[in-house]
Length: 554
Image 1 (cartoon, rainbow, N blue to C red):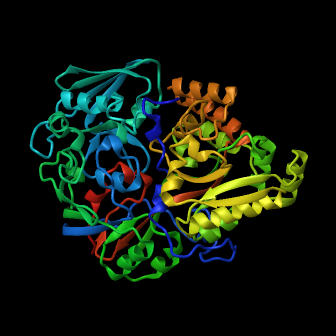
Image 2 (cartoon, rainbow, N blue to C red):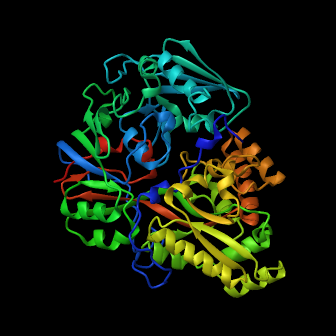
Image 3 (tube, helix red, strand yellow):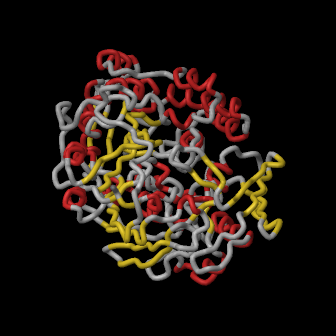
């Protein structure tokens, strides 16, 4: 399912590690730091998932927050990475809201309807004001959504709009979207970046300068843009005219400090130089879990760490070799050594919580009805030999991004050797590694590379739609007619049971053929210093105004 601007749709799934470079690369050892991995509901787990940190006792003048890299822009149409999105989520709002529990609810659209299979009608909330004091209208919504359709914008969110024929004002506070064909995911995406609403006047005035350090943005969120000092920090201030009393900011200001070096970030947490931050370096979990400077939390996520099979013309073109390789990878060891014991071996390309909308009676069966590949080096070697493996070379791309990435790569290389392949590790710079996600030419001669894949909606289709024939994110050009048909069926199905059944059909095929090798799931991590509290740890922080809930700790 190619988009109008596919080259921007999925390139940044690994960029969060690029800025987390460590001075020394680790080697894969099962005895590395971190406790044993347990499921979050085990009574003796080494970690726990937290739905909500303790409620704030009062307001704050300000707090500081670390971000591992400086955004290149905070233009919503070009924001598809952790640094810009975690900031923008507190300034700009979407028509719908993706909540920390991964449900979707009305937001700037007070209500919506689906009167025909190809029509969505949104009733815009009255009385909402932009940060410049002007009132939100249907014209602002139309201008904001249409930017994602305009090739000149080159929106990273073009893919969710692939079936959109028209976005029209059908009343002072009503907008109608017409689709070329039914699409069960379109409305869901409007709770994330694709549904962002900006002032039409601001977009027209700023033009190509929109979202840069000089112009900022003018939206409707609980914080407004205040200043951006390139190379140092970006500041937001509380918007007193915010429409939603339940999410009115408890802090007068939020200052985001750009700290690329992971050791510097960890030291800033411990010293109190910054009050908190998302995406804590895994090798610091133990250290920060024991400090008196604050508390380390883990929360809901949709992230699966995968090895992408980018060359199906070489030895990995045989599904049996891919299956053998996955069985030979010590994924529990990777979780322990590379992820600090925080995570679970992945038996799918999706996390279980993406199936929450499936009927309860069928959800358990769907999650169990998948091929599994338990760690079994002997069986893996026999299967590889059956498929003709006899010393063929494969190239595994990596980058010295952090210890976790290095440990994963070493483990995969060991597994390849164990089944009779000859792995060659090619270490690329962070910049060149990123091009693997954007430039097919960069993937020439590469058999495997790593991605940390999260979703922006609570639906397996956000993953499986990316693996359809011709999809930009189908990096190995894998193609399976039965899989494509199942995805098409899921896209067209609005009924929860039919939608889940089609998704499950696609999942079975993907896990049998393994165009990507699922390694482990990874929860959200966040550190909060001892003077603040209130955050709901969840991957939804990329679109939900999490900073508004931060206040003083008792």
